[in-house]
Image: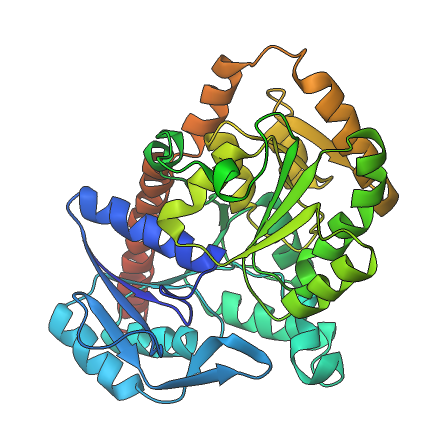
Length: 391
């Protein structure tokens, strides 16, 4: 099968969307399929890349580390014709998502879409939320998804949102998979030594884009209460983003510079080293549509502390892989309670394997492939029926 993936976000940009696409691409290639990425230019990329077509782009409003293409529809169509694509898979509702729809329409092939982002949590990036409203998100999402042959939602939470928006096309829940081998392989870096953290100090890890919607400030504000019970605890914040300076100032104002370490952005190949060094992966975010970092943490053998939602409840109900909290003021209590119990708990490796095998990159790819095949079959049937009807 020849698959064209259209996305505004791809490596070297670091995001859950880019990781999801790369994971899918690698697994499809492993199974003998051909995958072509249609994406934006990036200042860090120079020269030609195999099987990647980049289009002139600019930063997206105040979301400066994300980009949108400003031209290239005809070039994309020409290249897609040359490649003889069987299906288009859009991964954005913006520039290259629209280009993907145009290409699919012209080639008379189906266009499926993955709805990655809960946009209502990101409206502050556009004119500080004063121009684009939740109503606009609802209408745009509904229109885009209903113009697709079928839609993938990475979680039940995302599917429910689309149904609330009025999306009537078929929606299949397919959680993004994880390359288990990469996270289960023992890292060859001593992160604790590098950061001067003792082996017995409780190490809490935050790993994400450092931005307002990730609610990292809540973890920082919870640290004084954590330190009252776990005086040697450290919070390591991995990632970069627009809120980093503000959060560094918050740490200074709370006199927590000895307990909180900002590492910055790390290569994706090194992420598992940080997970494996931590006692707990912690997140206060409620904007996640697929919770990829939670899965990566569990795959690395690290338990999680996270906010209650449909996704995290389902993830933790099978095995003892962490604890959940509801309200902001419960974060410190959840962390301390789990740290005091975790060494007494037996590691439930069988349950962990069950959870991980269900969301492995191989299973993810198989589900997407089956989705492609069913969509192509239905599209062909409807196209043939239309031809017969018009005769």
